[in-house]
Length: 468
Image (cartoon, rainbow, N blue to C red; front, side, top):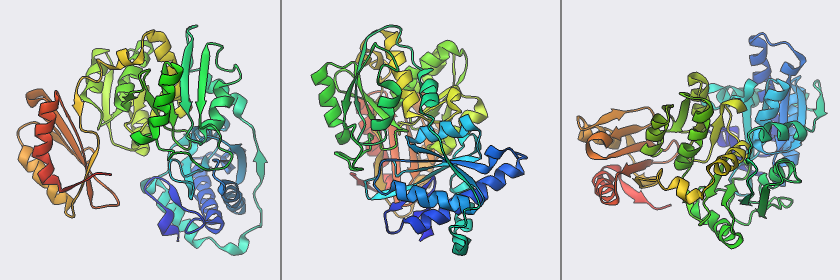
């Protein structure tokens, strides 16, 4: 059963089969054994290094899974600091604020309500994935002896960190006295708790006018899938922005670590274009700083960061890799097409709350409509991510490399990237799915006709297009 729920970057599955309280206890036990031993090996012997932060989302089964997880941590001799019903970035903050050995958020992020899971972080809120600890936790969990269940050798303590968390997030907000009206779709998820507690009740600024949509998360159900990457899930927000005359709109995912933005006309803003816009703000205060970006991003990100005097650094797709690259290169800010945004002053971690504060501040400073800000950044044509079904993925990638050898720059940082932009005005990245016989294509060109030409050239090498 454990093998079914352990994924590349987290633990996730349908409740109660295969994910249930019995597995949650084992996972808690495994997390405590692994993370506390890791802290001890680093010579960290403070009481907090025997502690793990635990938070949970609004799903109906999250409280019982939280309880079982916490029991497992205690039975392994760990101390639980329960911070309650919170967004996932709140857990990242708590780990650093309290200087704990790590933390776990009970959540299934953007998955439907019948799913649940666990996002695990080590000290400094560094992510734990399959290649850097999750496989070890699984091994410990499999061997956990249920005879000790309920022995409670550890302790549990509840903490309310909302005041400290709010202060931290709002340190990124400066509206410069400008009145900003923003429509927010919380997707019936954790943004419905976070936004009022952090930005509401006059905490943020009297200049901030929030128009709420789908903030009620009390039933653990969703009006629409809590995944802002699917354009259909933004339809109600787009309508609300136009109806209310908002300056822009934000849609959060289920656990509020990701967001998507629409402009004042209801047009969806690409996360790569938003990255380029926000990067300029960070480069104003940190001249020459490294800016991390998802390698699927528009060429405009690299060009605009360089034009602003910054150092653009392409990163592999996925928060595990982006956070590691932020730390390695000393990046001040980073963004992914998935809607994750990373901040040096937020422990290199992603945060929907901080991204909201920074976006509000950047729009206030610009003093003009978001559509006008984004238009010069969105200067190239993009295919979006297109899936192709093919059994021999490696052979297809080899064919692409052979076909374009000598025509441009080819690298294999993540999948294969073919960059013919300087000579021919286009580039492409092809990545393999980890779990399905799929190749994922992202293609960009200087104009629409060239985009269509190169798409038709590449597609036959990649298999059968899958439109989902």
